[in-house]
Image (tube, rainbow, N blue to C red; front, side, top):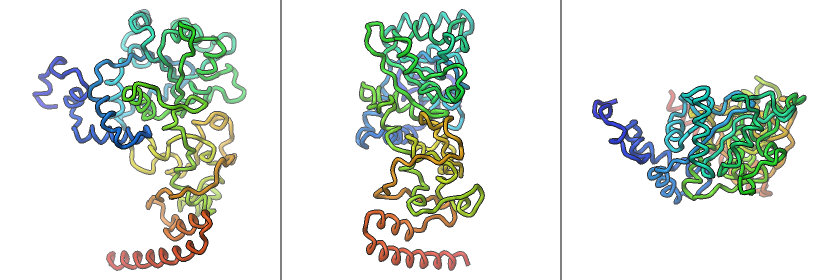
Length: 399
């Protein structure tokens, strides 16, 4: 950090996020790229990037967040703070006022609980309640206590005063791994727990709950939800399970880079076989992508480079984001295919997979799927010829 930056005080930095980022060495170009990418992640039109940028730059009244941990491994919080995506970490901590988090709170014991009580009193009806982890319903929830209180007691005290709740991760969304058979603690997600406990807002209205399943949940989906609210002053459109449609509106199978192999009937039969080495479809190895709704293929995970999500590196999707699939179906069990209609345009097949689908093969499979067999044959021949010429040129250059 420069001497000038070190000499600046907090009042010199300025009230807006743009000032905070500038002093932290985040360039304007990088900030603009982030705004564009997050606009796309939210499924907003390209023209909305200006509004997203304005919401980021001009937001001074940071929404207060109270973050509770119940039955979980803290993986969602750890994912949020991993060094592989510092931009998300910085923006989340600057965009919100995290008044209480059992993992990140500096205070402890009575001081921590006092901070919680003070935040509720000062932000009654205006704070966002984030819950990470499932709620144990058996024996009144005695299997998970914080400050001698069960999750149910904490929800009764806190949830009625929240503006909305976010269930982050599969555990909080629908029970997660704790709800797998035999489910000894009778673990359920936040929506079910609120319903069973009869917990509503203090005025009697239903508490809005946004679910962001995943194990762990993608930090981009949480960030996008916050930015959506800051930009449009409303919650994003949700599906029947409370999931934002911009993140969970499509099956993983629809946008998977291995989808062309599925439509062409090319499947890996065993780990390490020829098809697996060539990057063919992992359906027969138990991939749950055809029945799991999430945006994993689009945003991948962890900012560690392209083609690095589980399916990209050769492991079948586990279905961690889908209730009744992840932690409930066996790893080797084949998925129930919800859609087999080939898309209008195939996703690109990464060149890191040698011997993958050729241009000719992709064109042929797509056209046949659409009924144009004659066109497919002609297109296939032309593209095959083009591939051969391209291959010959490459060999000539290498010599």
